[in-house]
Image 1: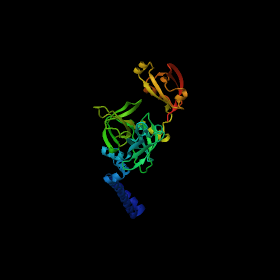
Image 2 (image 1 turned 135 degrees about the horizontal axis):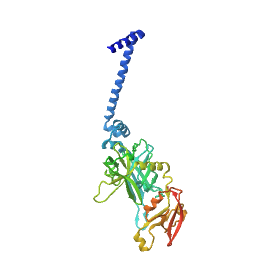
Image 3 (image 1 turned 90 degrees about the horizontal axis):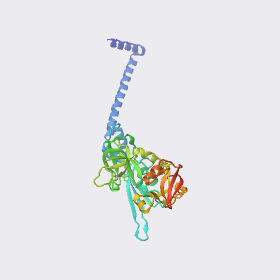
Image 4 (image 1 turned 60 degrees about the horizontal axis):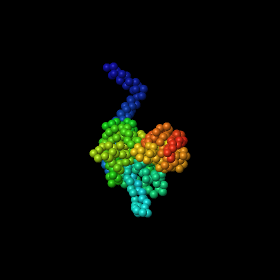
Length: 394
């Protein structure tokens, strides 16, 4: 009753102040505004439905548009393996290095040596992230004469010659670049948020370009695995998603379609399956950014020697100390300036006994370029103390 009285009072007020026509106009205006609001909601739902009904042909012709539609349709939701492949697949490329082998005067030979791997497009300007071991032949430091052809093959059938931008052998990462337009860029995730047991999808080119764009799925098997790769340690993600030669440099993708790792190695032992490893993207990102800007990781210490471990058996047989036999010294480096010579045996650095390359690298990485340490070498059966200033690795 009270409500009805209020309505009558308001009606008399408006009629008295504005007249019947204006009251009618305000009522019509209210209806129109309400209609537009409801219409907007219905239109939004209809447009959203249309986005989800994009034809497969349209998706294949425009992968970037497909990414936006998937993100819009799946906002906040986990993606299926099919959707992950559609979203990330266009950003995964094949990489081939071709080296012209020299002709040996005695044995002949010559010909071309090829190596193939995978890469991830990370910028619209054509920068591609991969493993260093995939493209190391194109590194001018390894091949000063530059007789290496570096090629990139895209899923959309485009092909381009690439340039080597920079590489970091310590972390097995490298960046190359192509001059192409309309490149689909992979979305990078956060590897620190990964959980053991979560979905993991590997995309790459196992066994080479013949099987380009292969997709395998599994789970995140373990985190922070320490793996020895030659003379260095890497902290990696373990997955049972199949990784094979040629997958190196490809993407490990999470359930949201974001790249969380760079596939790098697998354990190849008879009777062992499902042991693949990837570099966490949070570890790779700052290194890749340094490579893109400078071509190397600034501030990293460099000794400037090539060496070989002297194992205990050899040391006993030839009456040598255990340590690192210096096979070569790079000119104008910290080692050369300190007076380290070829045929020396390095046995100590910064007060720590050195018997393996792993120990040497562990001590070295405590310092930065420009730092000074004392080293001890054995030369002609005598210990010689030297002062070494680390150079900057390039």
